Length: 590
Ligand code: SF4
Ligand code: SF4
Ligand code: SF4
Ligand code: FES
Image (cartoon, rainbow, N blue to C red):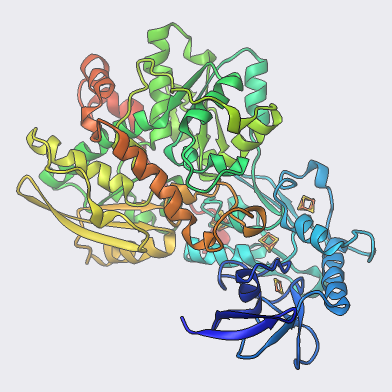
């Protein structure tokens, strides 16, 4: 990229041509407050005016997030005029804000509070009438509180990118403007898939996951036997909640923290990821051999399942009938493990620590109950887990590394670990498919073609003489391309992996917020690189495992030998498989 010469506060710098004043100033080590600008122009409305600076020769102050640098430009951030204007912009936002910081779940990572601190803004400078607000906590996954919204538009942009069709829009005009689904509907009456991507970009507490910490507290207080399982992506990001570098794997400390929080057992969802692969690979090969519905599509991402049920419900028979790994784990814990250790399944309370807001919705579905009991009783996001650990006074960084409980259902392979990143389910399935076909190991365990963050990845593999065409998509915008091909009858694939969130679970809607302003020790390009760093934490754990194919997990073999019989058996179907329903949450719009 070509460089140009500018001055900031009278000091000469060389910066990238084409960057905005805000980006250039950040690269030179200055922090200009900002709110509406996000992620290299993903959202750049220039609306909040929190980033105003002086540019010599320009008429008035300029919004640094949209104003491009040019050769010889002189920028002044600290003049009295610019600092007063930035402060006034924040005070105007605060004047239309509920300011219930103490009760607000965002108060530890609130960007509005951060810019208020930076600018010295006071909340009581422009008191007066406030915009009528909406509070929507109807779904089990997402809460919208427009009294905390600063109308930055980040959620609108992210939802359009992640969801494809876009659920969130600006409603009304002028002073009455609010953000929400069309016609200000509640999320349950909209095509929202509860992926939580909007939550990850919201600078305030206007969009949050539903906090389920109280549910866990209540179960413990009631004397339930409370156990927890953790998804692979959680260990790749939980350290960020405690100021650790992005991509720091914290598996051992996470287990130690969960024990200190009072969970009776700490299980790894990876065990059930191996189980999912056994069931899913068997289902795929049976469909290929017996003329079943192809392409088969993975079903472990509840955001994607929601999308299929709402938007592509003519394709539901393409979805694998496998439950997602944490739901399989819940069913196995309640209907296999509990009997083994002498616990009444009704007294067992299964908590899932997940990178995902959509799993909160999934866990309460009737389709995911077995023998009258919910497979999973409560879901905490990685962020909620961080809060719970902080609340308990645990010094996370100083914890020892401890091992998961390996109690009949604890063993896992590297294949289970990589489930957390786009392409991981596909790679894990390919590692096992050849073995299921022939009883012989496939040469090598890496399938590089399905790794990385391209929107759609495709490849063909020769598995024991059978050519299998596969594709991987993450984020619904990418998935739509593959789904439209299936609808048109032109899809050439046998097997497709779809993940609701861009990048897969490592970038799930429940993962820690990635903001430069809260990560002073990270590299400046962190918004571009955090997904790769979290993914690397999982690939490294895969590399460290002795066993890297699901079918070699000895406890999974034992589960089939002594309980389930074989993959896709009648009992396996009762416990580990589900079905899907056509959903029309907005009938009057049809
Ligand atoms: S969004 Fe921020 S400023 Fe608003 S109530 Fe929550 S913590 Fe306070
Ligand atoms: S949860 Fe996902 S689909 Fe729903 S509004 Fe947010 S980004 Fe859009
Ligand atoms: S809900 Fe959050 S992200 Fe969306 S406009 Fe409001 S403050 Fe911005
Ligand atoms: S961050 Fe520049 S106008 Fe909002």
